[in-house]
Image (cartoon, rainbow, N blue to C red; front, side, top):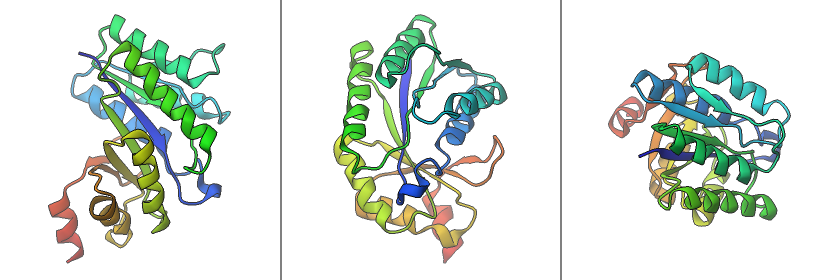
Length: 209
C-alpha cells in the first residue's frame, strides 16, 4: 500500500511564512525513507513560491528519489491528485506532497488545504495517512494557538519541529504535546540530509533537567 503524506507549513509571524524549513524537511524525510529501502515520490504542490519547485528538485537529487513537478499545472489539488495516482501506479511506498506556506487566518488558503486532502482521499480513501505540521522552534507561544487551528481544520497527525539545535528552544515541543495534544514525531537539528531525527521525549526531558 502506498502511504501518502502532506506537509503543511505553519509560522507564527507573516514574515516567516516560508521560513520554517518545510521543503528542506521534505528532502530530509525523503532521504531517510530512501535509505530504509523505500521507493519515494515527492510532489511539488507549493505553486505559490517561485523557487519552491527548484528547491524541491535539488533535494530530490540529494535524496535520490523521484519528483512530480509538472510545469503546466498550477492547481496544487490537481498536482496532489496526479501524484497520488502516479504513486499507486508506480508502486511507490511513499508519496510526500509539499504545500505552500500559509497562516491559519488565510481562510481561502486553508480551504485549499482541505481540498488537497479531499482529492487525495479520492485516490485512496484512507489518504493522507499522515498530515505533518512543520514548526520553527523559534516561533514562540503564539504558534500553539495556530497549531490548534491547523489541527481543527485538517486533523494534523504529527509535528516536525525544525531548528531544534538547543534545549532552550524546546518550549514549542512541550506546548504542542501538552496543550495541543499532538505528537512531536521528528526534529530538525541542522542543514545536512542526516539532520532529521526521530523525537525522543525521554532524551528531550533529560537534556533540560
